[in-house]
Length: 406
Image 1 (tube, helix red, strand yellow):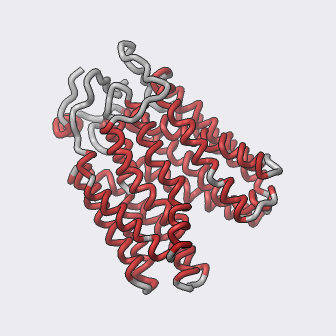
Image 2 (tube, helix red, strand yellow; image 1 turned 180 degrees about the vertical axis):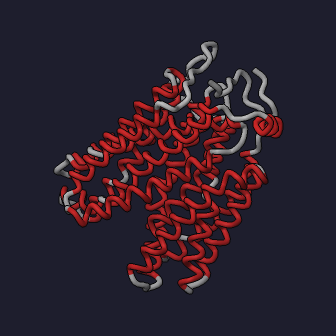
Image 3 (tube, one colour; image 1 turned 45 degrees about the vertical axis):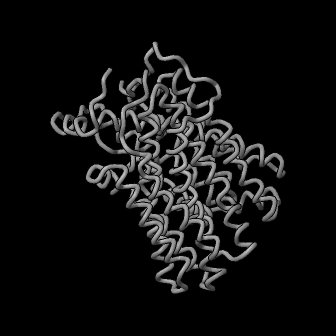
């Protein structure tokens, strides 16, 4: 079928009311994103308990924490075929339930080797669920005819904050994370099961062949993925190293360091909820370009000053600047045919690969010079993100494509 131009789609959506089932699907997809984030936040908040439970030091823990990223990257190539072969509503329901159950895995191992194995499976479940729910978010966005993806990722950020906050409260009740993981997995699974009943059914057109089991990303997918790589690298740097930078390099108390991380996270979540309005007003290319410039200015503030207020504001600007980039990267990939699921998986693999290497790269540069110098990488990558924003310019789908519409 012939797709309308982006402006025509928006005008059509504005002229005709959104069906009730599509509005419910938007709410349900936001809930699924929040559940995915809550599992991630619950896990991250109890990492110290896992290290103590298994009996590993900082070095062993660093190895173990590489495993979720490796598991996700290994599983993502298969996700495109899953999206093509199965009804999208059923696939999201199954994979988000598997992801909730995966929260139990880190509580089971009693050695570093077993922990690494469990975290590979944990990361694989995360990656599969991530691609499926983003594919469904693209479906909802296309039914709306306007940007809604940024708000979905805002729900994910909100879920991370809620999961980590709940885990912090649970520590006061019992230091043992196993009861908390069990209760959280059950509660989040029930929420997911209820929400998934409102998702939209979708199955690819039968005349479109299944994607190959493995294929190198196309040039278009590669360029979009590299934009996502820059954003995810900056996000990982802010989350993993901002507290260390403020506490160790600048010499401020741990409470100030924690406040810096919170400011970064809240700024990014708030910007994501406002991001869809910005994208509708200025378009995806301008939104990414402005975001890249905002993040670049923030990173320059972190690098060029030791004034704590300016540094915290710099990290906040980084969070605001990168907020809409990953949602737009997924939305753009989801409009690429004939296999949107594979495009999303390819972009996710490239982008999340940077999240896997970012902590190590920042740490390696810091060992050779200083942590301040390592944040120059964030300046350069966010500048590249702004310069390459044209890769997200709306265009016609590839020949033979099929619209992601139910």
